[in-house]
Length: 285
Ligand code: G4P
Image 1: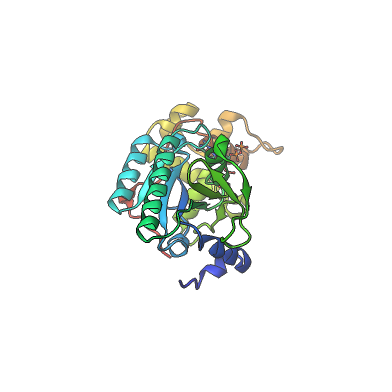
Image 2 (image 1 turned 90 degrees about the horizontal axis):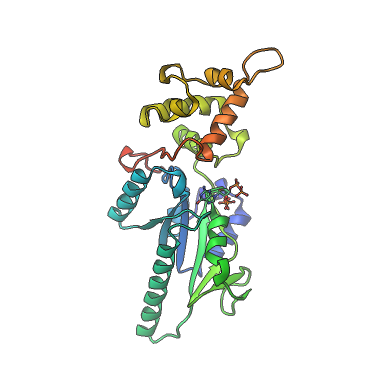
């Protein structure tokens, strides 16, 4: 497998550890944010997990538009990729996760049996860019079904495994992938959902863009929540409405933008999706 270019995006040490851990993995849970499943896929993921079974998990489905999530699941199916939608905080959708896991474990056991090899557990790992909910997902899946942790004989020394129910192992630490920051649109979406370090973007620009985007795609959603006429919607009007003022008496647009983004990220004014499969916002690696 060739990894040129990846090393510039993440530290060589972290990358080599991740590649090493992935060598022994049978199934990768690739976590993405259901509000923008493409922009939250890392540009390096396909190369890193080539040849492995992959399950795309549309996490935070509770914050996404349910109709759009259905479209995404259908889209991935058309592409021959297994996917499912979950809310890792509440645990919605985890019945499907367990069904899939047991199915893959059974499939592995049959494959090994056919080859005359000894049965073993299905080894899994969680991967994704920061803040997509990897730890929350992992905690939910481990839950009360876990048993002992520890290194497994015969498996590369280093990673700690958690033994799940049945014939399943999961790596105790999710693999963190670099987000894709080459495209302005992706940066906007990552910033809007809170998956980007605040130092990497201007919250006022993102806030203004989010207002326009939501009012175009989900008319009335935003203006209705804040009680502002759609054509008057802006950060300045929001600051005025919320009485966010600077000491010099001007409107505090920065505070208005952060308030807006926080409200959006926590689903305060509804569940919205920022990209659809037919928009052709594909990854450029
Ligand atoms: P990471 O490991 O990929 O970096 O993400 P992590 O699990 O830390 O989750 C990042 C934030 O997303 C957390 O919120 C977490 O609670 C939230 N989250 C994870 N999965 C879901 C989900 O399915 N639905 C919703 N609504 N939220 C989810 P936080 O505010 O940063 O922390 P906390 O308030 O939970 O402590």
